[in-house]
Length: 113
Length: 111
Image (cartoon, rainbow over all chains, first blue to last red; front, top):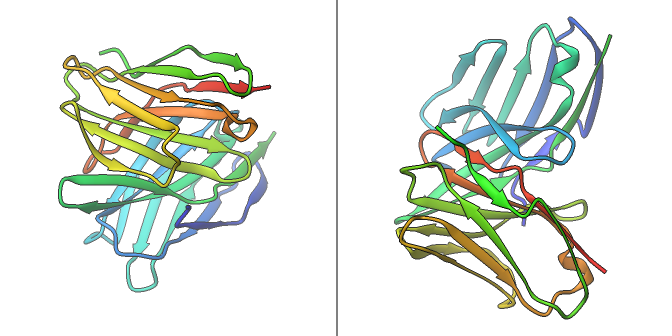
């Protein structure tokens, strides 16, 4: 079952605008990761934020994590047409030596020229 | 270094048949995880293997099984295929504290 809910489900913006996606989850986590998927292909890892971190940056990406609210947001600044894709948050919870990613429902981002 | 390689890319099978999918992780990675992606259920965890041992298993029926070989390559098998098994099957290596690298997936269609 999926742990996370993402909103919005779909987002359409123009090139140069910022895109913000939100993710909520239900249980304790070790870290939270964001992935991008183009047209039903494989997932590409974008950024990881640990449970003891509140904010992280990577290029045009900014991720925040609020463990008290069990939520995260991904901001993509100055969007480009090439950013058009589905974006998924995924929480990682480790139990002993076992670990697994639990994915959110995803946000479909459309960036138009 | 080479990424995660999944074969085949596409597969069409008939209900009742069985199928085996293959995944070769990034060289040196000993962990392999499998995920199923469908429009209705989204991305769901199937299994995790590490050094030939299954460390974790998702909530799937026993028709879904997997294994990992000594060279870290992994296979997953689905027996007695059902229409609902049609999905994109994704394999990933690496993980925990530095993110996973996913393969391009195997798209299975059951007719």
